[in-house]
Image (cartoon, rainbow over all chains, first blue to last red; front, top):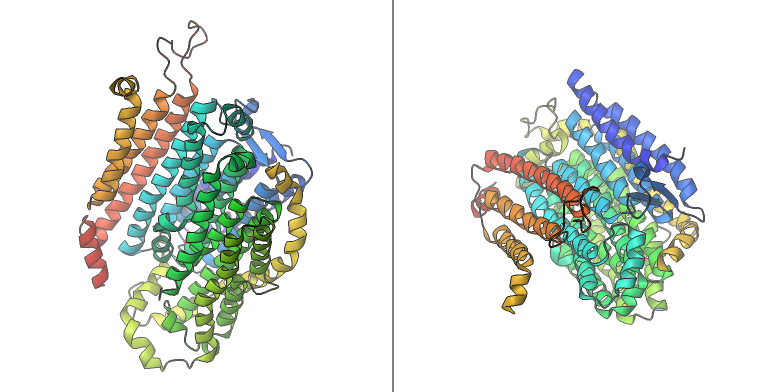
Length: 521
Length: 118
């Protein structure tokens, strides 16, 4: 099974082709085939991960061209955890999407391609290969965002595409600079060659700036985050959960790879501006993301701004650049994916059941929908960082790392970020548990028409076989019937996972230690 | 200064294209023009990459050709990047069609007015 690294990239692509071909014969075959491919992916990545967490990373030569010339796949603990996260989350979202999401075969084919792109980004050891996977991820994500009905999702996807392309193009330009400076594209080769060229060389510095800023767009760091709320709010529920859980996460992983594997800590030490750039972006993202999240009334937009703030935390860990902080970043990436994906799924479930898509609609939700409110509450508190949830462990390590590095201003902001997170989640928990549910009429009146159409968008998607979208006034009764066991199970599983991962996170941190040490050496 | 720029005419042109592309992308209200701006922006990057492989008086990257040869790697990479760019443009234009079907206009401000009225 030495071809395992190649297999984990190829499997979802083959699955996607299979889904498309099956769609030609019978229209509604997408879901079972996709589940088969996704479960196979979990098994394959799991087998790969057991080898990658050892002392030596797995290196795979693609097509017989050896390392500095050909493309290399490189799987260490960090890549393996990202690939495993992608595989597991994609299965989880599939369980939800069976009844909730767009159901057409092209949708599932694109979904699997996105899994392939994300896995490829996680395990590649070549910067240009990473650009190609970045674009595959981008293209499929744009298409998935557009899979909702009506103009809103198409417009959101177009905006996402224009901004995302600029980000990816800057990344490509950065690769161009690094290539002109060194003549190589392999990450490990680059790290030695860049050191030979000298870290004070303007070409090298420009390459760093372009690569990092290009990835900032994909991670949605504050000034270049504008695509994210529109895209998440415009996409169908299962898509926004999938994208919010994985796309920015893997982009943040790519950032860690670029900064530490390609440019190394020595570059950060030699160039003060690099650390400052990262730290400043982190602080601005944490604060501005939270403030913007507080001012939102639509739940999905609020969750999107919350992501901006949470990824600021990961950036802070990258700026601090020590073992503790990076362990925290890895834990927070995994934890955030579970928590944020879970929150989006829960908000989708609540919207399908009650029609509530804005904060006002969450009044007294605990009585009307105890399971949904419970899951949302648990995930929200986990995100704030209440122990023993995974949100706590990640933030704790990052904060501890900042204290170790004596980066006091950064440490203060990281601790404050917990309070800022509380600021936008506490009010929802308060509404759900301590307020009276509005009278039925008052609830229907203000958002009536809009709510009907939005529910239809969320549940029908592009499926050619979608149930009647036109029956919006009576949408509530129909929508309530559409919440399936799979949707409930996924939401509850996400909430449970957020707690379980928190308990397991300390062991995971120890498991990751050799990888992080290697990254920082 | 002028001599320096004339020496590096390729770079000047590619960064000029980058600037024009960015300006079109941000400045124009028509979404089709935005897509065109995105294309021009990408073309600037492609040109920059390609010229990095250029060596005066070198022969094409063939094993039988005489000694100073042009590096084939950037060409291959840009070929890939062009394919990516074409797919992006195709997806973008597809989305533009859907936006037009939904709102009946391609003007950003008009779209914003329509979508707020909903």
